[in-house]
Image (cartoon, rainbow, N blue to C red; front, side, top):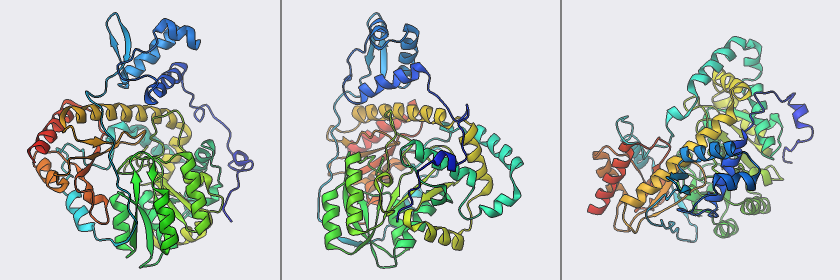
Length: 493
């Protein structure tokens, strides 16, 4: 039976809204988001004039001052540009249209996983801080409120009840789990605090889930391409991969998954439903609902890796597959590493029917996540303005995505195909087939530029002419020059 105790959840959480919790958007920010959504959806096309200040004020019932503030914000986000005596126009983000990558459908087969040496060789080469971090898996540290978090840690440690550090040791801080449960509730996925286990980052949560539902030699359905850490975990646990192709915009191919579940004794699935790494794909709500139904039909558990869910560019947060799971089969894993506190290593899992097994395995392995780090994040979530920070972070990532897409269009070959995700901070590029991404990686690194080559995202070392680029760092002249250099290297191959 799935844990679904949403009744009177706010009362069960002993929570009352505070001025800090009610982090309301200003009117001009809401209006800016409405215009941004029209741009994202294509209603306002690149180069098209946006409504004049007078027209927008009259049509939307807001003051001219509000419209001006909104347009200034949209300028800062790189979405519109002012032209002298002409008004505001949607920014032309690229000199040419960028085609979407093509992911070939295929019948899924079982694969022994052996990629760690390749992954380690790539990752060990991109640690130099002087290297342009297009190959990094992390956004820029300066995008996060680290000084404010430090103050939260100092305050939380001073106020810490020593008895709570023992009582909450394995499941994690009750104050933190309460704040996490509130965010689930606000997003339309109510669940009890008791279902949550705090972990040492999302990766530990994912490992715990996989170990609870599999044994060595079992088959696990994963994405193709998949985040390389997924492949490394399968390799370490001696599990076999069943690669399910991922559409660059719509997510996993449900037809291939359904066929695989019929043909093969798959014991678990490990998928990212929102802003999938490396493609950036997001499943529609209908596909998420259908996936939950498919899991229920075959009684196969799913590990949902949802670490990028807070990094959406649209006005509404995407729901996880967990929201459509009526049988407790989905173990939803996330963390604060990508949205708030890189380095604090605080993640969690909402384990559904597997909650107790996950908690016991956590107790047997690492016992507890960092108590001061949990206390700091709990204090920040309650008092620090998390939603205000997230809006600023999302705007930065979207602006940086536009800058990178424009640079791809300017400097890379015309045959290049690229994704355009609606969140996160990765682009997936499909280069001309003659290009060997591993060779490109070596040549780019020699010029001080890191990239993430396609083969590290595949159990079969496929995607040899593909790469992932990170736009999670502020776009500078150095970034632009690096993209220009990357284009010259590709043209020379």
